[in-house]
Length: 323
Image 1: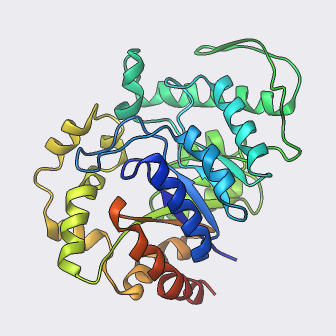
Image 2 (image 1 turned 180 degrees about the horizontal axis):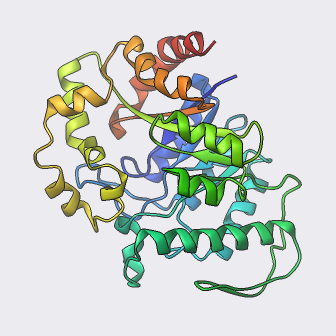
Image 3 (image 1 turned 60 degrees about the vertical axis):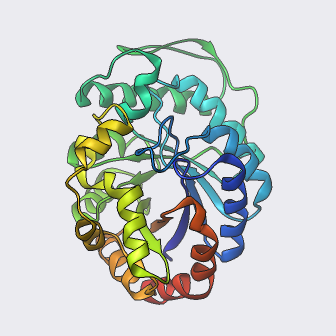
């Protein structure tokens, strides 16, 4: 059975609003909720970036059924992996075992703030492997010592471990990252509907592992207004992740996307009030083998109509298509 999720997007809403959105999304019938973990928004127009982990703690108490997940946390610079492990174990306890730790190699946008520079992608992947090893060892319990090329851990231990081990998901983009992380983790995260990714993960990782994707939509009865809002707040997607991971701040994304048009956005993001358009955008992910798809409702001030439509029209249409 395919799960459909809701994105708590820290770049477009403050912490109190996100907690309210989380409760409303559960009431709307979403199966799971993912939260971005940013220090900066992609663009100034989005206007927010509260701390994801503090907000997640509140979300665990405002919800009772939905699975929760970071989408994604980078454990290689802004956070040390030992600290990420402690945060994840705590959220798992607070949520009564509803949490999955989603990890990725990060973006310069968020990680540059600690003043350690921005390593090339091959080094970031090496760091992420070590981070996953450290986190996994801490989830095993007991004292952990670790001496790698990038990280050291000195006699660390998680004193509050949940009864159910925190599942770990990792963001991948190609065969190289799949081969590195599928044997080490429990689930796959990707943003493009590539059948080869899912097939290769199944060959090299755990059988029946979840494959989790994300899709932005801009819901509005006025399609032109939806396109305008999506262009204003989500045109950053056009650069692709190889470029997006390298840009240092919102001004860089504004400059890099200055020639992205409203038509470009409308061709790539479902805009308006037609559930069938969302179904059509989700279908390539379903056909590729993804098991979980999280929707992003573009516009922090437009979540109420989006969630109402999700309950009445969008989720029924998606579940019918998935069945």
